[in-house]
Length: 463
Image (cartoon, rainbow, N blue to C red; front, side, top):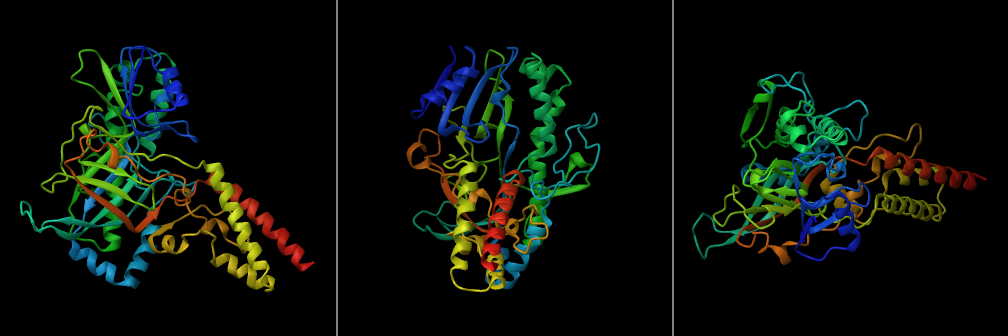
């Protein structure tokens, strides 16, 4: 019988969903915050160990966002302090950054990420664009007020220091989607994981190498563009060798990936480890995890202040990354629609003209935390407004800012079991961040419904 190991109790429904897709030779380790997504049905914070010789592995195990993750670059405070003090510079740079990052979410004409296919030396066969490949992507400045000594090894001299990082979350784009299509197709045809990844060309070992590097290549190039726009020049860049030197990216301080797959060399049997929605620290540079979007990220440093820490634990060197989804996308759609209706109804009750009411609807939005969001976040949504005078699609906030996911909650309870008890925890908060935007399939019904409601209300007022 398959083994399911967990640090905390899991629901019967979640356990049964795992038992349905695992065989007697497979194993699943449930990390804190583990779940099966209510929207995508993908597994999060689960470490799978799968028999690589078994035919017909269930493709439901695997998430299409292969080797998604975050890349962090530590900044020099001599760059950051002048930027934060100059309000006008901050505003203009934020606008420029939002305009400069391509996103598949906001445009049908954009495909981001390197292609999966390459020549015999793993070099790109064609040019590609770095950018956001999903609504959960982001890039920007994150800051923490962190207690540490002024230099390594000085005890009793801890004080608060400002730690600043440039962080990007994005995936491999085209390479990840192509790899997922080919890999799952091979599994459905009855191939084993070993046949698909080691012995065949569909997808084959080269495809695995390419997709494993695609996310990092995409993120480091985005970070270089962001550093130039924000004016952070005390950072190190490096040439992207797989592009034959045509592209450059920043040298990462921390680079972690989720939805990774690797062969377990220390096992006597042929086993592959898949880290679903969690970080496999054995193949990552450093360690990090996420909270919800407004709360930021958590980085882990060694006791000596090094980001290149080595982590070992009984969960096969993995730590949680994804936070729990607490509200479905459909519920967020209903919340946004109802809040917009309530705002418009309140405006109509002020005995103002239709023209004044329409102008207010353009500039206002009903989010309870709108002031904080406008200061720290920007995004670009696809335009579904057409000729309407009320550009609702422009101001609808990404769902991650409407409470779709909970904040990180595992460190206070399981840091010792996960091997993080001795690490230095840095909680980074968003300062100047650009988001991926709202998925078009979810934005379109919001705009259509609200435009219809506003038009009917205006017609009644004129009558």
